[in-house]
Length: 301
Image 1 (tube, rainbow, N blue to C red):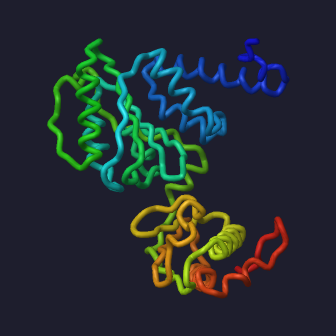
Image 2: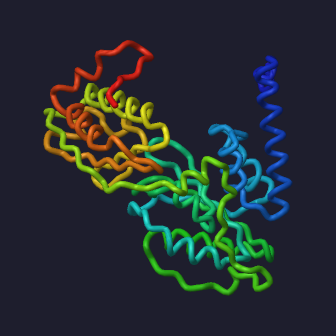
């Protein structure tokens, strides 16, 4: 028996599907008006109109299947965090619409318009050995060869190589522009943030194991509860750690290793205390931070 529509048998599932289809229709209309899908979805994510698990289905349905963007996937050869060359170069390519789909080490998907500086600021780093899919559409002609060449140029720049300007990438009737994403109030506030230097926290436990992980999570939760207008950034071996659990597996971070932290925000305070507590959390004394009830937050700051 065909079961394709069984999940739509409940009101909640039907309404969820309906909202998704409505959003897809809206995106199609915007793409026909020459909008970039990464800009559209990231704007919608800021306004909580698109859920995380909708991003890939929308990309597949709209720019891959309907509008027939040329695409190719590749593995990033080296970690990069300087995107200025890619931003400057791709911004000149006015005949092309370009979308990058990046899969980070934690499995999160980021959509990037390489002409949009805020998308690069949000990405922060593209990690070595991670998957990147490049979509390109020639807005000026039906020449698919130009799209293939543009994909190659993008991948070469991400690999750190220089590329030559291809006149076919440029529509002389359109002015190049480094697009800045529409800012919500939160995004506007984020642009005003200060950034501390990176501070080192040395691991003094024999291994940074699950107990240390949980201690760090409790400490950072306490810090962010006290100071909700700041963010804590964690680095290990020059890589950004977006999810502590994904890195601090048993045996990966050892005695003597250094974990780096950095704080961003408008009114940064409490950093020395945070360093002190994180040092304790990375030591054999981590258990003191775990003596708290479920759902409760430590009062450390």
